[in-house]
Amino acid sequence: MTTTTPTTTTAATDAPAADSRALGLAHYAARGVLEQILARHGVSFRQHVVLRAAATAQTPPTADRLVAEVRGTLKADPAGIRTVVDGLLAKGLLVADGAHLPATDAGRELLAAVGAAVAPVSARIWGGIPAEDLAAAGRVLALVTERADAEFAALTGG
Image (cartoon, rainbow, N blue to C red; front, side, top):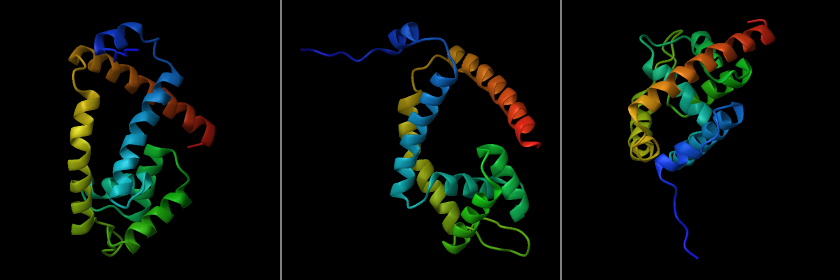
């Protein structure tokens, strides 16, 4: 029996309308790929998010600012994020510089290595999707994120 792989056009034409389930499936599929790559580099998804936030900040963040930013991104418990920060400090990927927590050279090198490993995979996942489809998806996802953030804030009092 011969099997065929659907083309981008077929998949896009036959795809159901976007909804929470479709968004979740896409998120977990992509996150699963990223987590496999991160595991090869000895870091977890949360460690990567925290390290990236520290390394890309305009100025080195304080622990409180780093926790607040990551909480806004992941909607995770602040105590759990602080545990991740402590782990990154212990691994030497972040360093305490007074009240600030800049990424170390090792932390920036790790982010560069992960980025280099992710780039070709990301190109295969995103490649060939028409620009107008990406723009439409971007607008929808921005609106969903805005609305979900508002609902999260209402539910958590924040």
